Length: 392
Ligand SMILES: *Cc1c(COP(=O)(O)O)cnc(C)c1O
Image 1 (cartoon, rainbow, N blue to C red):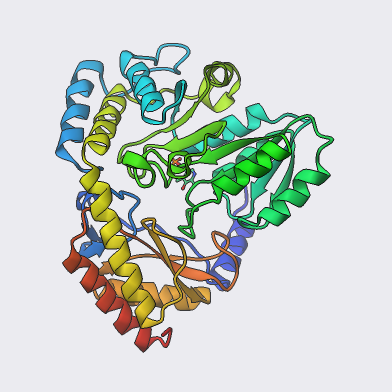
Image 2 (image 1 turned 90 degrees about the vertical axis):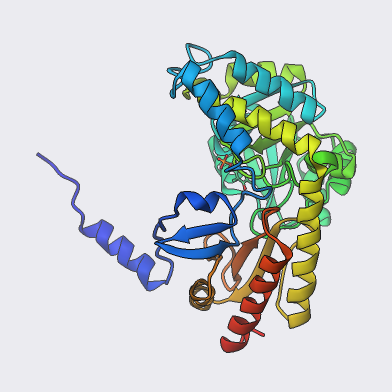
């Protein structure tokens, strides 16, 4: 019997290790749902979770999930188009459409699957996708899966985008795809400018609002609301500020009807558990009725950005919960992260290929569950570690 030999795999892994890019898993305890977490048994202030509003462990959500799970069971038993669809999936889709101010919405099993399904089914071989250089991996994979040509424009560079639009007028359709809030840099896409170009050169806009939903725009409605600019397709996830699990697409009724029939990652995927759908509805209700969550978060973001800039750190981003502190070399960023952890702050280093070479960073995230004291402690620790490692 022929067996996969492992020698070449070991060599590949060694090569990754030699570049200082070897990835390993950390064991996070249930308390990571809140701002304190036990990582490999040690208590830390969590400063890198995507649980921006602190809802992932919220009792109102877990109670709702448990109640519905007791009634409907844990698994959904099939894809949405066969046996997996329930009233909770449908209610959630109505709720998202209302929340996003769109005609309709479609729930996918994750944001990743939503992106690959949307992009690969909308853009065909006669079309072109114009994609921001720093778009999320799931957008890149969606472009790879589609038969369309992909042209990558420099990060948020509108001149470059315009040149590429001008040169590609011969394609049947043009799709501009961008993160709303960029996941590694924390900045917001220039949607007003993108809209002007899209109208001028006849292009559709697809926005990935994974990090924007629940965070920017009125009541957390996202990037389109933040700029008051309508877009053609909004993709999002429940796994960040909303605190649960799953992805979605929101837009026109024909868009959603088309995706339900053509998006392979929707059709060939088992539906999410109904309990999670119900908890997600609860989360959107809470986000809409508690604007204080968003305003407290913005207050903390302002505090920490001001302080870290004062200390002389090279920080990126805007007023979003993602706060990248640029360290430079990947090994140094690993040391930095380890030193933070020793002092009780959990914020891992992000290294290539997730970010460009020489731009390794600590990707910190702020949560509404943090207090001003937590922020002070984080800043103090950053200062001490930054001095010690000569980053500032
Ligand atoms: C996290 C993320 C996704 C994927 O969402 P999941 O629900 O975790 O699969 C997609 N796009 C962006 C920009 C993200 O940050």
